[in-house]
Length: 320
Image 1 (cartoon, rainbow, N blue to C red):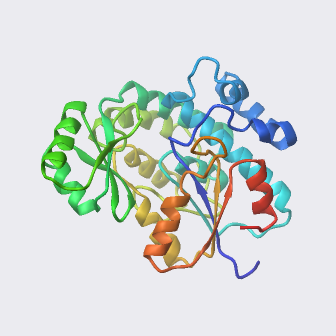
Image 2 (tube, rainbow, N blue to C red):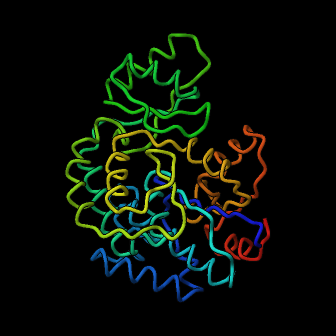
Image 3 (cartoon, helix red, strand yellow):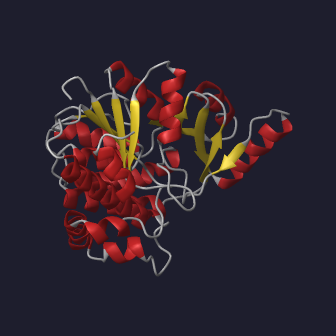
């Protein structure tokens, strides 16, 4: 274990689903305690929202973000309980909303404070969520060239050849039409979001979110946490953490940069906590991106998911 350098990874929006966390709570008191803590912090029943979603709200940004943070922490806490006396992680990172999960996991934020932060963040992103987002199968240089012609902006760099752009609906339609008319085999795929997150259209949300950030206590992270904004480790200074989270809201998520930083840091193992995608048996949200990045970098690191009871048991037992 002393030679292992483990990275904890946390997904963002798009990995939520009805029923998320119900299996954990049926078996583990620590998971039930996590959901109760979330309910107390937020003033509504997190277990009912996540397990039953009676009003079909889990896909709304204001609820998605707290639900995913709660599930990620429940998965992490169950994994730690099952894994026993494991060495601490070397670093943590999360995609967009997942960066807050990483900060909670690293002890920089308490769970209750983290939940209140992402609740407000989600409310503002939903309220000022004009426009939408398109996934393009091109590198960031080409994506930026195309986006710049249509009042759009790079929003997330997921892979060397997968970039997300955001903008107003009419501008996105113009961009997509231009790609189609160019005869390129590249496609523009619309993503299910409430707005053009991580673009200039989120500036007003960020301005209002700053008040909540400034009122929230941050501690120096116990482990290194990578910033989406800089793709480097957060400083210990609370003011610097707040500032980077402020800019994160209207700046591209440099996920490629975060993974490269982890590779440069000699990470040997990655474990993804929380969320799930697909129908039937859920798959981890970030696995494909992580594996493609590792393969493209000719770098070997073991990857494991810890997103439900079965995968958490396997990860805790060291089965890849």
